[in-house]
Amino acid sequence: MEISAQHVWLMMSAAMVLLMTPGLGLFYGGMTRAKAALNMIMMSFISAGIVGVVWVLWGYSMTTGDGVLGLFGNPFTSFGLQNLMGSPDLIKLVSAPRSPSSRWP
Image 1 (cartoon, rainbow, N blue to C red):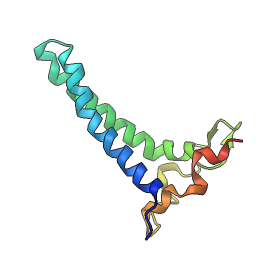
Image 2 (image 1 turned 180 degrees about the vertical axis):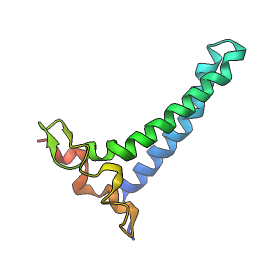
Image 3 (image 1 turned 45 degrees about the vertical axis):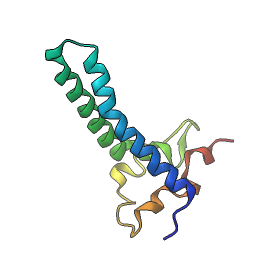
Image 4 (image 1 turned 45 degrees about the horizontal axis):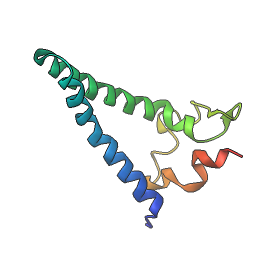
């Protein structure tokens, strides 16, 4: 398996976003009263979890594949990563030909 610079950048970006979630919760918690800080932190973590589920169900399909009016992909082509999870190498999911920038002229 060959890991390119694109794969490394994708993993580093994901790590930075995952580290941003508790920081955002602490930031918002600092702007509220002390008894509401835990609520703000929990809302940040729950929203990150919901975004992850939405990405698996529809988000990946909308960033790849054939587009609707050339703006975004069809959300039901790979609904729930149904055609991609059986591959032996999951890093092949982010191959260069399927990147969203290849759709734009």
